[in-house]
Image 1 (cartoon, rainbow, N blue to C red):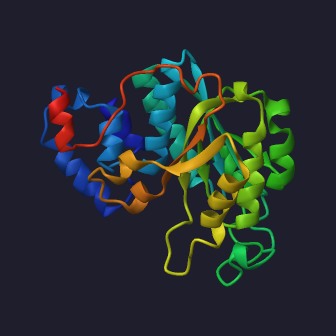
Image 2 (cartoon, rainbow, N blue to C red):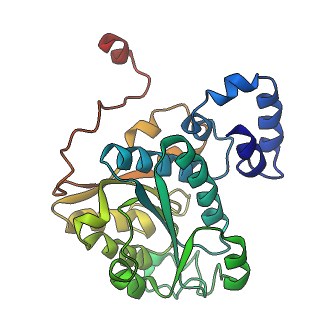
Image 3 (cartoon, rainbow, N blue to C red):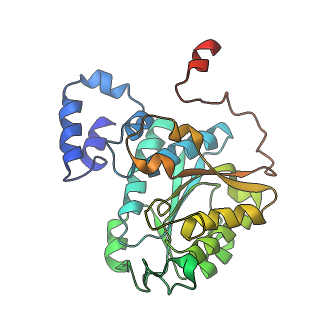
Length: 281
């Protein structure tokens, strides 16, 4: 496992990659093989650790519920680096947990649509930002599938057209409030297409120019206000861990309380390091 991580998963061409390689070389291979992929993700020595974190949690839950395949979705692909990182995470997580991945990337293929109102942050986004070179990206992908078109239309018929394995994680990088709300309509599908809890990463919720009433932040609030049996909530475990990246504040979980498997026992709850944890041992 470690060789493939060194070759494909570490931050390429970065100072963090150089530092990680130096650290890893100090330890015997037998010790490195004992590391879980989750520990490497949480050490942030791999690309897009927030994708790996969500995917690992999705695969673990899927496996405990008896699913052999789980789906990961990226909304907002652009150049495709995130989707390619997701493919790399999938290979390592499948090797460790035995759960395979279907990966889909939703994108218009033409860049951002025009902002509709102040919630779409027109002072920061413009139509046409982040276009995709579909041909070049398709040549780079090995497993992920692109779903091209305006998200309002592609989400409407995605489940019927693709019949995916249960969706276990979603990476939200559509930038605009309106597009994010369009993506949320996917969650209205039948329970069989989803795990009862879905790990989510929101890319655009931390900036000096954002507030609770614009962008993805207000999209989350509006979704929660409109939904009775399902809510999107911050994932507190990551926030209280000693991760150095700000991404720990960008991890959320979609809870579908009405899902038939929501209350199914899947193992004891996990807690961050805390004084009370010692009392439980």
